[in-house]
Image (cartoon, rainbow, N blue to C red):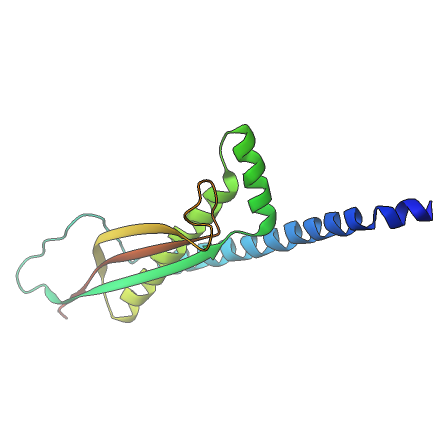
Length: 159
């Protein structure tokens, strides 16, 4: 019995690390989502439009470019699950949550910058994403994703 355990030690260590990676990755993702949801509630009253804005004369004091960017990496367990999903086809939920978190985080950072400048609204918002990392140019490989949100923060004249 002891010989069998010693022979299987590499497999036991590997499985233990996979389980540990899954647990810690899931906890980190849930913590990030809780943070995102809390900050979205705090910044809910700052509207963001993808449309161009036109304002009546004298209403706008200043308009400035505001940006927010986020780089989010996928953990090894999710990467392993995504590779398996690519073999069989279907939705790759690991990548979907990765992109969702990156986009939402970038928008929140942009809104936080706009709020700190005293903006009442952000117009003409755009969102860009890019895969980055050493595997970014390989097909079906994704290490990290960067999301950049930018728009025009409009600061109204005081009444």
